[in-house]
Amino acid sequence: MRNQQAAICSALVAFALGSLPPILAAQNNASNKDNTGYGTTSAEFLLLGAGARGTALGSAFAALATDPSALYYNPSGIALMPRPGATIGTYDYVADTRYTWAGVAFPFSGGSRGIGLQFGTFGFSDQKVYTVEQPEGTGATYSVSETFVGLTLAQNFSDRFSAGITAKGVFDNLGQATGNAFAVDFGANFHAHIAERPIRLSFVLANLGTDLTYGGDALNVDVNRDAPPGVPTLPQPGKLRSKGFPLPTTFRVGIAYDLLGQETSRLTLLSDFNQANNNRAGFSAGGEWALDKLGGSDFGVALRGSYSFQPANNVDITNPLSQTALSDEENLQGLALGGGLNYSANSLSIGLDYAYKYLGVLGPTNFFSVSFGW
Image 1: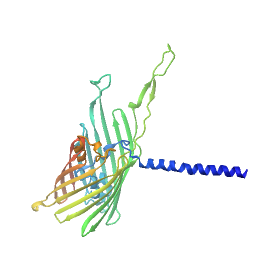
Image 2: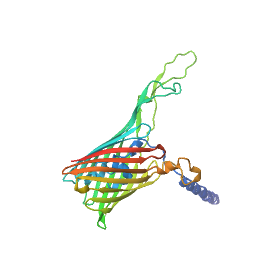
Image 3: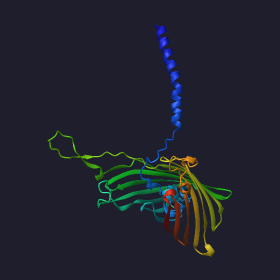
Image 4: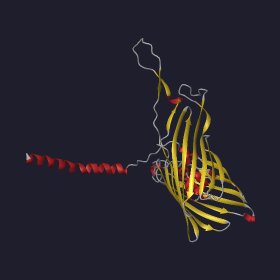
């Protein structure tokens, strides 16, 4: 009996050892596969930015944002605002769609805390309905409206560190289908000096929340049940089941350094690393040159530019087999340029900003925004 048990144990050990190489090889092959969740998230309009200044500087603006657009880029930035402010911006997106963002923020508790509210909307209206049976149109129309509303609270925990959190609701209206989700943004900012010049570090986790789930009349259907010949049946009401889709959660780490810093002029270089749950890791880099008190007046100007690398798909553009006639447009995707004019006197400030952003094969877009401080 003991010899039989020993033989069985020996066989099991041999089987286990023999199975290890295939198992390890399978695990190695799985780890080498690209598991990026391309196209698996919803509410992509949450990534469209806020204000022309931030659009021109890309996602790297998170380390520099200390105006109302910080509500979007880095919630901690509103705790660094010297006075209340508001920003509203809009631009025409592709295929006759439009995106609009607005935010207002107020410092309080002697400037150590800040509170703000933001609103973003994207969509189109009165789109004709086409079907296979009626390719020229049914005469009906539909609209798409995607919206988010966020409330932000930020605080300075020391003279060098601030943090903020945003709670926001996401609402999606696709014709007769409606969806909603809840998300939070976390942001932190550390500011210090190197060689007597300001340096800022940022950490942001955006759009961490629930899945976007859908309902509404679009999911209601009539079901015709099978019945024996000659037996009349009536359609029975039913409801389609829909799957929830995750939000585009994004993690960003950024840095901004004043290469030139004087009383009336500033040259800031920015860069960041970002990772989204629906894309590969990306990065952005840019700069802002700002001049104040031009000719002793209350006016100032700023020039901005950035390049954001966000791999949109699993294509190696360095591979000759993947090159297309559109390769130039693909390489320009992420390029952004812009500038602004501002006026500041006593307790009032007004800013007008413009950004040009290239979307690759989809072409360029123009973003305009206006800001107020009081």
